[in-house]
Image 1 (cartoon, one colour):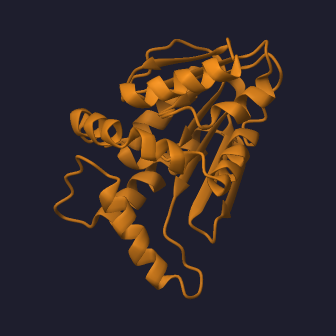
Image 2 (spheres, rainbow, N blue to C red):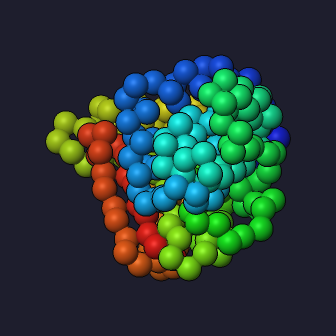
Length: 220
């Protein structure tokens, strides 16, 4: 990651606000679509990289059921504390979280699916990270990545400026002196998507949220 200490400090400081944003009604619909892209079945095991406060967990749990397993990995303990609370409050004994770096997941495969939402832009080498995620999946398993992106829709220019400000505020520890934060972010997201496309088939890509969200999934 860009700088783990800064990432932990930033997201740890804003954990409660982050959780409110991550579980807002509109955002929940995005997360449901990301979970659905994995084509999970009851009893499957899914790993979420950069799980944050567990906002995707309800939608993953809907698909794997009580006999499946959900493993969330994140570097920020306050976010994981909220994720544990969410699972405990819901009685999901098959949902577990652990402190770990998504670039070096502390888990061995094979698993049925890997999900990463809003994390590709944080990695220095997202292509290598995505390669590791696909290696973790069993043959026939799916990997899905959901990310923000700038939009080329008509009248999007003012919103793209707000998008750039959002990225600047939410990208702690970046050092990109030769390019804007937006350019660096989108370069990293594109690199991760390219790696996923190269390692998978049965790929599906969709945009929504006015073009500001892109969801790519593929079968290993």
